[in-house]
Length: 448
Image 1 (cartoon, helix red, strand yellow):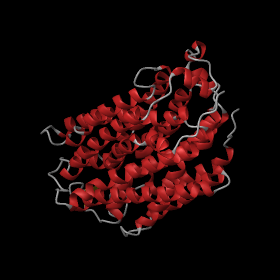
Image 2 (cartoon, rainbow, N blue to C red):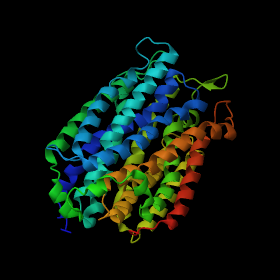
Image 3 (cartoon, rainbow, N blue to C red):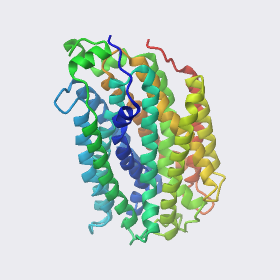
Image 4 (cartoon, one colour):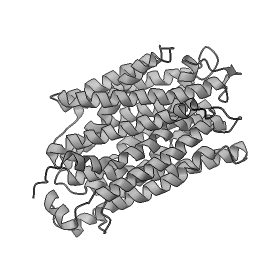
């Protein structure tokens, strides 16, 4: 097998730069979906069901993108065509989704319109996101892979930072952050518009700067025969059966990590509105059209941005650990403490500490699983398909967590003001990260 060459820092940067734009779109979705559907009239106990679509689309789309991009060889590359198509669709949908309440439709119709738009947005973001992981797996040698995924993690968090802050920045410059009942505020709508513009510009940059290897070069650098027909026809089920132990053991840890973060994305808006902004409650229902609730929605973007900053800082610390497993464990424990602390903190600024700690877990989740897995897959083949299938360990736990979220919220009970006890769901997220930290010890990082 021909050794993959060392790449310059800027070539590694260009491989992942488009991820910055994709992550802005993902951050806007993550920080605002609960706010959007709550504004449209969703009940907090049903809110988690709206979060089934993002991971469901991921578990369906990403393995297919991986499988078919493994076989795609054309003048524009192998992975990049899927990146460009996904980003183009995402841009169109980002201009539609935040307007779900602005077309004069009935509440139920607006909710259906929002769900359909969300489905297409999730599908396209997943289609655009997966090629970046594959490009690193395809073209970066084992020695530089940690650096490459660290760059990807940095760009991911930088994009998140920008996307999370858009609504509060637009509010600060005078764009309205409140709207009639059932209508999404202009601060959120304009955030999606600008995010869509940045996304397409970033993806154009990547497609212009990155030149993928041709089939012969790819085969030489990855120890494969050129276009092996017997490999191309292997089913996904057979690949799963023959997957290295790292695939399954890291996936087990992933299950609890991503369930925890699903609850963060789902319930932070309601939790912060209740604990830090004292949003008004009427007959046990939080008034989502209130100025306090919408202000909390902006502040959630700030908190998620703080989380992204914490993640960038911690990403610098992770390489200092001699053991990847120890780095993983410490990161998840810190994140778990951060989640649990939110239940006891009622000052909006003190929550910065909590979300900086949560950022440590996020940094580990972005970098360490893919470093361990792609090292185990070196020379195995079907890199794209395996990475697409591995996305199931991200999506499946979110689907499960979304399905049981309303039940868990009901079991926890109501808060003192009679509203749903959404702050307690972040406490649950912390417990889930502690479980994940314990399970890191079962990870098998070899190629068998």
